Structure formats: structure tokens, C-alpha cells
Image 1 (cartoon, rainbow, N blue to C red):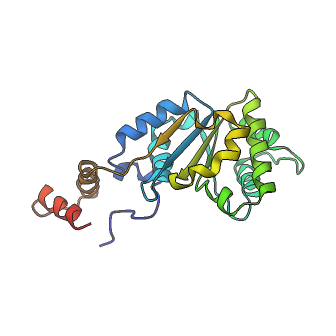
Image 2: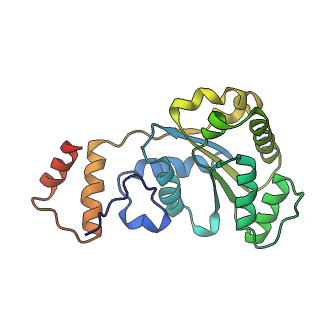
Image 3: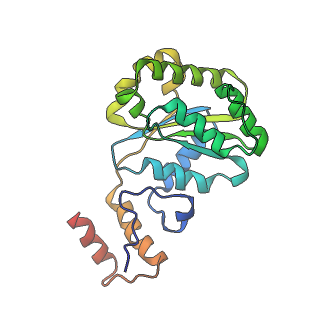
Length: 218
């Protein structure tokens, strides 16, 4: 039997039936994204920040109310952002289009608010050059300055928050709206184990006692 748990793999929208233990964080995140166009989501490594966005938020927002564009830096965050926008755009975007123009074109294609989700965002400041960082910051400033249906979510490990100093100087609202994803409590871990196994029809001998033994061993 394959394991019913995702372990280090992120949960996606299609995993809704086996995503447990983050109900409070999902509601908090849902509230915040309607209060701001720039949101910072951070927490210790392994707390499920990406899953909270890709599965929790994705299933809380109506599909007609958002168009998620997930961006990871790879070799250059600006090139990756451009590539992901173009990948999601049915209408070809001009080669020389600015980020603002590209996002506006994407919105007109889908008529849904565009959510730019920057996963592992700390990599820009760990590995990126000053020029790469400056180009990205300028793009975010331009997007925020334009009245458009675009939201920006930055997802990162909290131990690197101090690296955002230069970013905050250019975008003072950076920390205005933020959500810290806490390590999961034992009660919620219990819900993950029992909920996931029940959803997949897997019986636990001795029920919650077995689930608690699993928790004690990890």
C-alpha cells in the first residue's frame, strides 16, 4: 500500500479531501487576501506554507475569483515570472511587454484576479544579484501602483525575513499584512492522521490510540 501522506511534497488543489489541520490558517489567509494586494506568508521550514496556499486557499476561493500563477526563482526570478505569466496566457504577449502589461493581458484573457504566488521567495535574496533584486522590486512597485486585479503573495522561511530590509525600503507596505504559519499542534496532527486515513478508507487498529502512538514516535 502506498502511503496516504504527502510528507515533504506540497498539497495541491486536488488534495482537498485529505488536507486537514489547517482550518484556522485557511480562514485567516482568506480574510487577509481580501484586505490587501501584497501579502507575506512566512514560517519555519516544513510547516506547510506552500500547501496552505495551493490547497487550502485554492479550495477556499471560488475558481472564478482567482487565477493562480505560481513562481519559483530557478535561475532568475524575473525570467521565471515572465515565463509563468506567458504560460498561463492564451493570447501571446509581446516580447517587449512590461510585467504590468503582461499581467493586464493575462487578466483580460481570463477575467479573473491574477494571484502571483512567489514560493521559496527567500531564494531571491540568498542567490540573486543586486540587479535581479532591483528589477523584481521595481516590478512589484509598478504592479502595486496600478489599479488592477492583481494580488501578490510572497511565501518564505522566516529565518530569512531580515534579508527583506532593502525590499521594505522600496515597498514600505511589505509587512503591513502578513501571516505566520505556526508548527502544527499535536491536536491538529492527530486530525491529519485520523482524517487522512478515514478519507482513504484505511483502518487504524485502536483508532486514536494508534494515531497518538504515531505522533509520539515522530
